[in-house]
Image 1 (cartoon, rainbow, N blue to C red):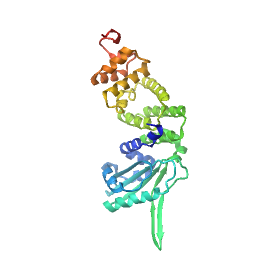
Image 2 (image 1 turned 120 degrees about the horizontal axis):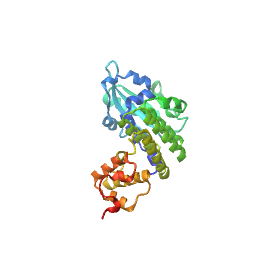
Image 3 (image 1 turned 135 degrees about the vertical axis):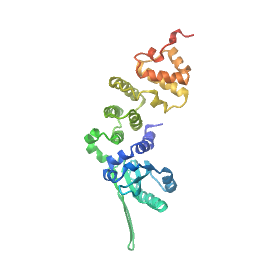
Image 4 (image 1 turned 60 degrees about the horizontal axis):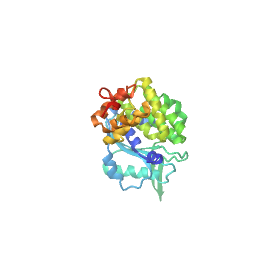
Length: 316
């Protein structure tokens, strides 16, 4: 899969919105966040959204999300979020915002608040309203927007903000801005350091790293350099969360994939492996691969990864 294709994929935005929805609103739409009674929870309505908009024309975007929330007065309100990521302005975007809004209202008869996150690179693309008028019959639909390009001016504030969604926004901006691989790698490492320094839970660190790793794609050679720097940093910080096989294993479900991932990590940490060691990994069962992957986090030598038992050069 090419970098361009992966940059267009909606997975990191959808995952980030689902996991950090209150944080997303607190960062980008603080007035709306304050108006919601979060003690009553919130619920995503993906099926309802798909039933209503499946026939609508749509441009390239990272995510549409529909969530049910409650006001402090106890009223049920649905929040419709559009994340627009296309590089060029889409002439029909404001109309699509209106169409989605009225279709959902027409079907469910509840308040719908439509929000647009403009994550594209076109500085002049700033739709915020859709209007029509004929012979005194008029429509004026307006919706709040956030243009992510504008947040470059708040970079220092984003870096200092403990809100986890600030890291998502920073990763997106640097992926959009940094086409040079070395520059992108440097920013990726800087953001990962911030990820560790903010005191997030292990689960949050792994989830946010997945988003950063997806958004800030690197060429193979620079990716290997990044992994070496990451391993060194994790060892220094004594927080071996990210380089475990747990993250890479989600990209390869088969046992062969897990073995190849472990071989890759061993080579990054200890250098090229001997043929006997490579074969030992390839022949191992799933449980053994899991044990070795866990040991890799703290091992100082390749032998410590394999633990007790015959060394590769003494087998057979």
